Length: 50
Length: 221
Image (tube, rainbow over all chains, first blue to last red):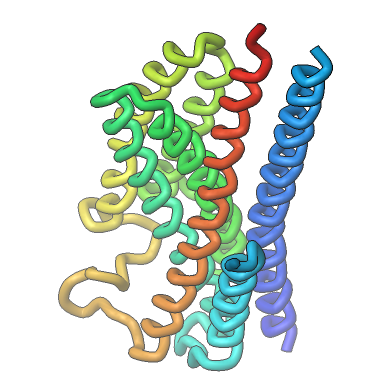
């Protein structure tokens, strides 16, 4: 029973941490994409004003 | 007009199917028990990282051949995503190893060459941040990327050439190796799911480089 619980903890940790890495990476790319799109919008508006 | 959510939803569905198969379809392994279920995530991440690095390698060669910026963008996109999956390999492996081997890590050929691979591609990204001129940066990274990729076949063959603490190959491992047919199907499904995730991430990261190029052009007086 104890081994079973330990195994469950290891399985849980592996999947949570592994998917956590991928999820954090996705968040990072998403944020950088939004920042780039906002910057493009800002530059386009500046060019329009000029 | 195709919905922008179609591919991500399809990707999530495939991941969900793989997760169901891993925990409810795959039989329990006879010697290791339930802990063996980490194998599906670990091995699929390893293959996905390898494919991403292969894509980066092809992009690096294409850039050096023609100097079209799109190959540099694909190169960095594939390296970043490959590095994310390689990180998953280096996390899930030790978590499996501790209850099975009693140790988190050992300096055998497979583990060491995988860590070297991770460090090489971290260095690729570090190099990228150090060179300011876009063309020089692209050339430097493409050359570095070609050499970094040389570690990928070394990682793959390490458990075939040397006796290692790491388990011997179960895929294309020769006589006596192999997986239970259901386990094999679950492994292939998990690989397909993670390759789908990889493709989506590479596509987004590639778009980011294209947008950065657009920003640079707009910023010109």
